[in-house]
Amino acid sequence: MRDPLPPRPALSLVIPIFNEEETIPELARRLEAFLATVGETWEVVFVDDGSKDRSLDLLRGLTAREHRFKLVGLARNFGHQIAITAGLDVADGDAVVVMDADLQDPPEVVTEMLARFREGYDVVFAIRSKRHGETVFKRVTAGVFYRLFNMMLGFEVPNDAGDFRLMSRKVVLTLRSLRERHRFVRGMVAWIGFRQTRVSYERPVRFAGETKYPLSKMVRFAIDGITSFSTVPMRTATWLAGATASLAVVIAGWAMLQNLRGEPVVRGWTTIMMLVALCASAQLLMMGILGEYVGRIYDEVKRRPLYTVQERINLDEPSREMAEPTSRTGPH
Image 1 (cartoon, rainbow, N blue to C red):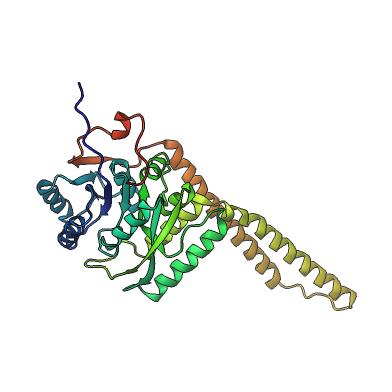
Image 2 (cartoon, rainbow, N blue to C red; image 1 turned 90 degrees about the vertical axis):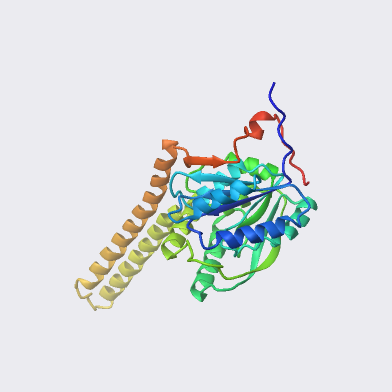
């Protein structure tokens, strides 16, 4: 006869880790201080995303001294959004909070999230009222991106919100069913729906180390978000075709008017080269956009797993969703 499963924790924290050896000791101290005040059962799921420094060894030490600290060690670096997914796949709590390891997502904000969760909300996302330590360029580009992004969608992704959020059990289970490879988790959570609300906090500077999202990754992340939820870029072909056709009509009308006035059009190469360059650039732009979508189709049809795991610590129990026909989904 199978042993009964232990009670489900009320709260799970999912924390992706990539090269955070300088931050992990302070992170552990802050987590232990915060969790001692929660008054609920809890677990912390660390996901090591193929770290190259001593992060994995430090996490092993944490899990050795506290069985409620759990570890999923990915076999290589799969990226921040996949690491979040790996943590959500094993998180067992009634409420699951995703937060970064750099302490820019303060654990203490979770207390307010839990209060809103107990009011009956399924998603509580954290809005950055102030973003300390970030450049003007990053703040402006992030604001422009989310406003343009929301214009393309039929639902709203909150401005000034990252992946720091609380989700109820039913939201996590729904999110687990979405297995697309190019993941934009904050957009997926917004797409799922359910009752959502917000809390505000001031985002502090990173405790130590360097950001894991340089400009190149930010651009890639933005492209993943747009192509995952909108076909508006593909419609650009229609708009460009209309614009170039209108330009051709204007130029033809101008040439006819010049002839009627008895002022023949000087036959030079400037206008021709301008139109050729314009049409060529429009065609190349659309080929690039189509290539992005076709590449995503190619990745999806291969149906490879989203990630591979090299080790699991304190996570040997069978999946509760496999063992139970139903799950508790309401607020704790």
